[in-house]
Amino acid sequence: MTLTHVGGMDIEELDDSQVARVPFDALTGLKAFVVANALTDIGAPKEIISPLVQQLPKLWELMHHYGMTTIELNPIRMRPGREGRLTPVACDFKCGFDRDDPRWQRLNLPDHLFTSDTSEFEQEVNQLRTHQGQSDVFVINDEGTILAPTFGGGANSLVTEVLGQSAIISSDFGGNPPYTKMKEVARICYKHWLKQANVLFIIGGKSNNTDIYETFRAMGDALREHFSVHGPTPLYVVVGRGGPNLVRGFGALADACDSVGVPYRFFGFDSAISEVVDYAKKVDEWMKRGGRAEIAARLGIKQAA
Image 1 (cartoon, helix red, strand yellow):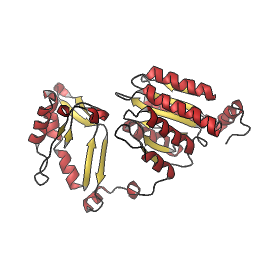
Image 2 (cartoon, rainbow, N blue to C red):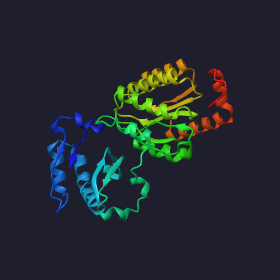
Image 3 (cartoon, one colour):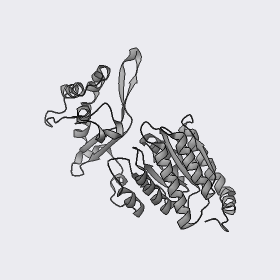
Image 4 (cartoon, helix red, strand yellow):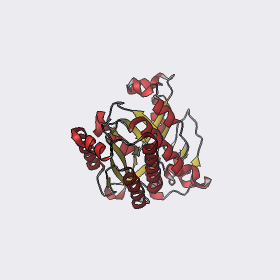
């Protein structure tokens, strides 16, 4: 068990004194006292110890009973309830399965979740996986019209569900990716999908640790280079984001959009993600009704792709 009450996506950068790495006996399971001792050793606040001690041992039962090899919860947020008592809420859950263990079949998961067939696009992005920054992608509809690089698991779930078949990809590029990695991810996305996209929809919640300026500067620079190499394409950019250096990030991305001549609309942290997603869908519909041809004419393209 690896556990910390600080750090989030930057757990690799924490001092060893802030991270508990505790072995336990798989035959007897993860006991409450193991969790309690680990949290005490790393100096966790007393008010979070009791709720976590009650809930975290149940993860071993989940892992053991359904043939899992790993479970990751990051982050766990503490929600105050009645009388001020805290309840742990898993905001992002990931797991891996042992396919040779028949117990995973109890969950009745669809077969496509375990497919080993990946597209060229997915392979290119997956090669960029590092300890810093997510690079998880899945092609939803290769004939879609909204290219949505998404930041955060919660935003990804909402966007994927609401956009439906209009979405080209499902993705999570959060976790404070460095400039070089984010620029390369954006370059790959643009190379494969920008020609057919009506909307470049950059969306995520309010970040705690992702530097918005670095990620948006990288995506803007990649957009400039794409237009320079491949030529202009009719496009409308819609952005919804919050977090550190947001205004600088918006400025960098706006400069890039202005330099290539595409329209854009930015929404800050005070805008609900659901409303921003609806706006992106309306822009996509407008593009299909003639907006794409209008932007193409403005860019000097004789015929929209």
